[in-house]
Amino acid sequence: VSNEFDVAMPPTSAGCIKREVSPCPLMVGAARVLDTGALLHLPPNRLSGGLVANSQRDEIARVDKDRSLLIEGIRLHWRSPSQEALERAKEAAKETGDISGLSAVDMDVLAIALEHRAIIVTDDHRIQNVSGRFGVGWHPVMNEGIKEHWEWVLECKGCKKLHPPPENVSRWRRTYGSCADCGSKLKLKKGGS
Image (cartoon, rainbow, N blue to C red; front, top):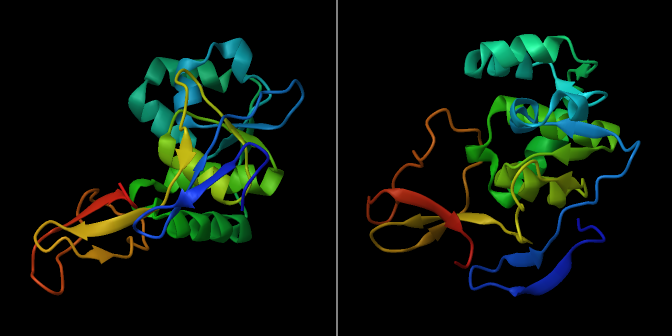
């Protein structure tokens, strides 16, 4: 899936297609899903009316209790994604290989954006990358955002053999197992880089 902001690039050595990308312009009245970074860093008046995942409440309270109290007083639309939207978001994250670096809260944010055809306001590069997989626009919070879409692969640290990316959310990030050929640890890297 591509969007009007994608520019096709040639395949990389890992067979992955990289696409140059730029953020969506944030239009007045457009539905916006606010990720946790947006909830923590945007001024309160820019949060009003945003869609947010119910699962973000605990995450915000854990990170900044004062901000959590402030957010509760803002007019936000709290949602839980449908199972169908969550499955579609997980499939897109598996396709890019980003799923092992995304939390359950991140998956909820992606699913809500998909379900409501909304722009995601995020600085998370993995969320930006996956959102492009299913045609959801994104807008950065404080940073520029990603310049291209990519796919991840696992590379053996010993023999350098490439393996498919993990298919599940990892509770222990950067733990990807061992190479079946030589036994060395696997590391996650951008395909073709």
